[in-house]
Amino acid sequence: MKTITPQEVEQQLKEGKQLNLIDVREADEVASGHIKGITHIPLGVLEFRMNELDKNKEYVMVCRSGGRSGQATMFLDQQGYNVTNMSGGMLEWDGETEQN
Image (cartoon, rainbow, N blue to C red; front, side):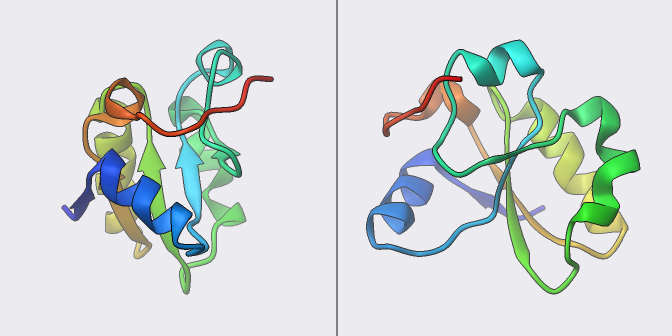
């Protein structure tokens, strides 16, 4: 499984790189603070909404600590998607966040 650190994600965003961030946390977790520009797809509904994702794009999966996003990464990888897990999750994110 490919991984990326929160610091690497933050650096790429600061450099202006367009990242496709998928946050798989529950709605209340995302509402309390998330990375700007994420797409919210809770892990529990990912298999039903994966058709919204493009197999020709790269995605970075995000959750609280890296566990659920790791599950999502493995699942989507098995389905043929280009996915990377943000290890450490939002617990290790020091960048700016938005709240809903």
